Image (cartoon, rainbow, N blue to C red; front, side, top):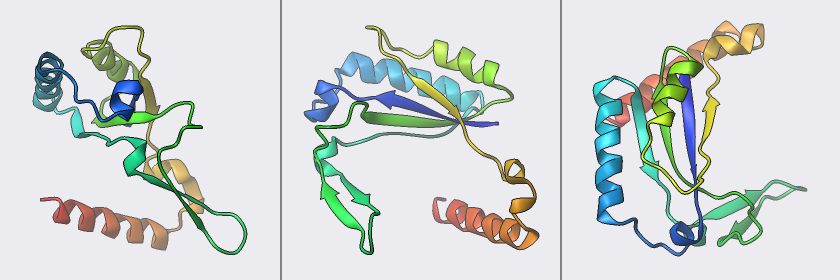
Length: 140
């Protein structure tokens, strides 16, 4: 099972302030443990919403909205993608994360191909398999 772990942002991440070295060291150590256990598939921090954009799909033409997104109630500052044997295993890993201060981290299962059932025809399955292979080969 794959999971996306969403790390919320706050005033510090939105201002572009980098975490202190101690926090980076703790997170690097944690990421090494995830990697050595074969859990970590991807992990990145995200730049502030002032560097981002949204695209609204309404009417005939999409509209680009440049950041910052002051109306956003929950901003994502980073993410992990993990592969674990179960939700419980993913939760055990998440409970070890080097966070404090009342922060809440969101854990979400990622849909797998088989979750789509017969709506995902054999042709669509093959096309998606090829796309995944292309993405993997580009990232090597």
